[in-house]
Amino acid sequence: VFAKARIFGEPFKVLREDKTLVEYYTKLSSFHSQYRMIGNNYNQVVKELRCHFSEKKAMALLYKLENCTRELVSLTREIVELTHKFEERWSQR
Image (cartoon, rainbow, N blue to C red; front, top):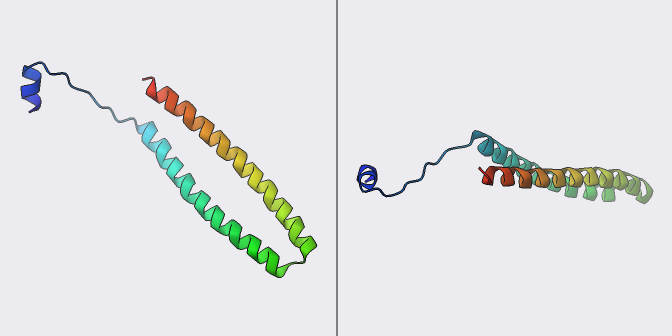
């Protein structure tokens, strides 16, 4: 079929596999699974704080947890931004 199409002058596409693209999306998939684990652990920590600590101590620890969550959110925003830049650059090829 390929040879016949070339003989009759039908256009064809050349597909290239970009290793960096595959690697990047593999890392993103890994991040996604890690975020799910963090979410699960987050819920367990909050439950344990509520059950085993005084309200004052639990609030202090939740404050620290909240700050770590903010850092994670800012990191996630950077990842999304980099992904958009990567997709723009890759689609221009």
